[in-house]
Image 1 (tube, helix red, strand yellow):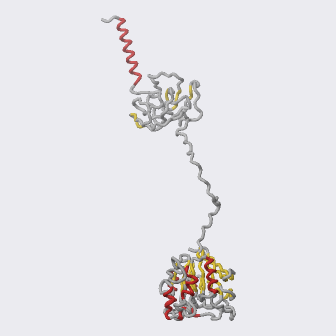
Image 2 (image 1 turned 180 degrees about the horizontal axis):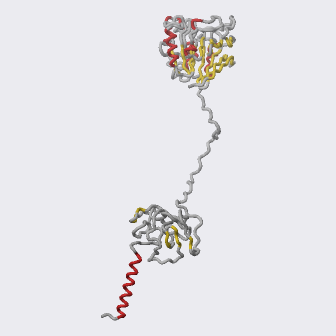
Image 3 (image 1 turned 120 degrees about the vertical axis):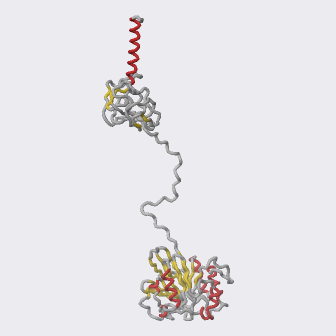
Length: 451
């Protein structure tokens, strides 16, 4: 039999055991706001930056319920600092509380204890630091002033930007960039020298050739009578190659090297046709097509060398085979400037005068200018919307004007030998006539925006 004192001691021990079991009630609480979990029965787990799932659902960053029932104090950690009563549960520092579904900053109503030391991770989310800030619902008022004032500025949630690299700035351009409207793109000029009635191997031919070479033209075209007097093979190199061999491709004459590519594009005249079948002419030059009439596509400019002579096998009238070829080809040209040239002039007030059989509808077919020789003078006309030129002052004897100007005549000249210089760009084309001694007699610029 137990004594009365032993029975009292056993009853005291049983009371203590019962009291301890009644405090847990199946719910684990924590004073660490970094714990993760949700309402219901869960396990106390320190938050280490990973998502933690309780029995009542899955928590996310800064959004979760408290791990203990409302109003239940933590039985394992007695409060060592003033407690803060929240309005929505969870653990909050002694600042304005939070409500709703907070994480480390908010939760359901109850008594919470600020951490010692402060947590460095949030609640149940990705482990980001959650600074003590104002919650999104309810409020909490400290019962006593906090011993340590809360920070006035929340710490940054992202690391501060690193210092920019110390790469030295680029060297400024030697020419400062322009401002405002973009600069007009540079245009590429194509320079073409034009000589007519020149092939006579006389002093005047040398003078005009010197003028042409001083221009450093890209191309040279001729307006007929390349080989006086009878177009013979025996005279052709002295009349042509002696002065212009450096422009002639496949040159086989006696006056030096020729051009790596052909840059000399003649048209035949009546003196060239004195030789049977124009044979010395076609043998001497290497030209496209049938070599009597042909075209040269230079991109910006398209050259159309025609044969105006009555001996041309394909005819020289507007209804001829030659004219039909020109009409079709001009219609297909994609160049900005189409220049048609030949020997007999459709319009002239020189000694020979106009050859009306050559008044083809050049403008209608697509030509931008028409050039011819035969009369040993210089004359410019305006026919419809395009200019026509006579240029026969390349070397042979000068013809003085004996006829009155035509309605189409704009300027005429018969004093000195010379040549024309044509300069084409993407914004227009300029026609000039210069005397051999450097006097500019005429200049015409026709604006045109190239496609």
